Image (cartoon, rainbow, N blue to C red; front, side, top):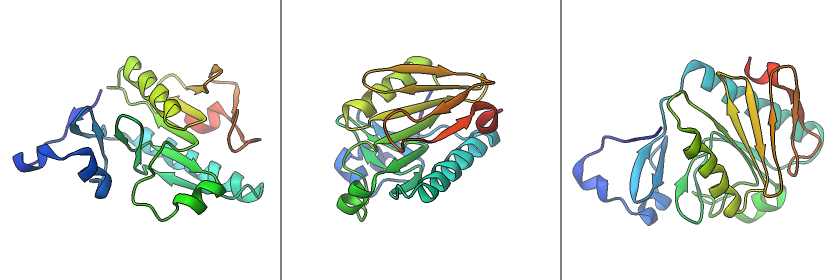
Length: 182
């Protein structure tokens, strides 16, 4: 569940255009409101760091290039978002690498689900990313050791004891669920 960030009254009227020009850290612009990203737990931070490390290491070793980001701002068709971990292809780095906010979803996006998040909201966010240019979204559920990989054509659930792999972006990457979040 997301909570409205406590900000001075004059700032509550921040428009999407204002957010896109200078997005406050750890916020998203959702349905006309500035929303604070849930406070991360130690487990959330550990998984975010691991996934960023593994995606970066893999893209470097496999010569796929591109860039991996932690909590980067992007614009979906509807909102201003900051996914927990995101990968940008080399082609999109060349096109948008200097932008303050990516004007579309990242091709590969990961959201680490907090204990206070509602499943419906997380699934809706994955669909929003897909409508805005993402090709693959990972939803990581630390408490259950689940990763749900969502593409426009497929949804797969990976659990403890299994290996999750990319489906459309950063091809060839795979990691044991237990190594990522258990």
